[in-house]
Amino acid sequence: MDGIYLLWCRLANWTPLLPPPWCTPSGVVRAPIRDVVSVLYVQTFIEVAERVWVARYEWADVNVTAIGSERGLVVVDTHGSTAAGRNVLADLDRLGVGSVAHVVNSHWHWDHTFGNAAFREAARDVPIHAHEEAAIWLADRGEHMKRRFAESPDQPHGSELAATEIVIPDLTFAYAAVLDLGDRVLELAFPGRGHTSGDIVVRVADADVVIAGDLVEESAKPWIGMDSWPLEWPATLDVVLESVGQNTLVIPGHGVPVDRTFVRAQRKEINQIVQTVRTLAGQGVPADRAAVEGEWPWEVDDRIHNAVARGYEALFSS
Image (cartoon, rainbow, N blue to C red; front, side, top):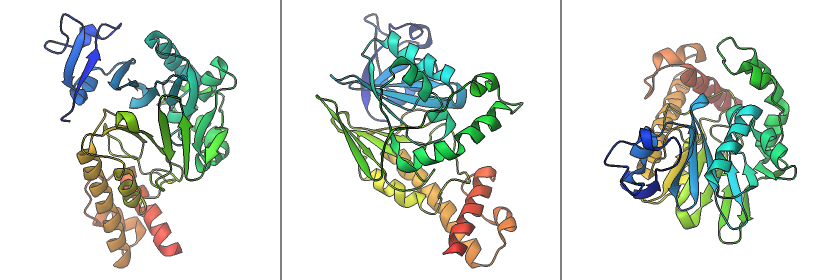
């Protein structure tokens, strides 16, 4: 990215990871934010814009964002278990910028919501905001997802997942909501279906930051699952891009912060997948052959197979 940010690097765990010339004797980091965050692949919060902090956690490579205000912190996403949520709270305590006043879930998936119980342990009445579809899916599918991951032999955090209490967001909306934090306002918006049926973005207008959840991913190609809406995803990103200017910092659900150019490029790739699905379906290619016969911008894996399945389902049910 082109933007230059000043960050303090004298916090615990920072200094050893930041080689010269980023860490100066005064303890200030001056570097492109993507370079800084790439180096700081540790579980700590860094300030990426005015009173906006991001922690990138190694498990699930998931981001948790904290937004400061005179009325407390707003935390976007809570990580993947109650124990992981407690670790997030401990990291926020060390940051020392205020107590949590609101929690926002960007969508219903486990790595973004299973830490909710830890925040309710810390503050019983803390509101948890989400799209109404996210709350419905978490209530309907959360326990199944928890069992599936907890029982997987490939999941090193199985025991803490099994011990996790699923807490459903209690403040939901269909289209948009506003959080008045006194000295700043947050906009929560549903731009349309894509990664799930209930993805939201959080806009911090005064800091020119958009938190995009898993509608945008940097460290891997966006996950297209059987609860995704790939045919609608490009148009949803078009709505997101209306709030993303040339200097806007976009915080993805996974990976380092990105910019408008990155989001547009990812939107182009997803649209290529959509157009390929439409073409194959129009040519009468069976769904079980489409992944092999199509030309895709990504490696053919479960994402592409799921895009075909979901795309064909939408096309032939309409």
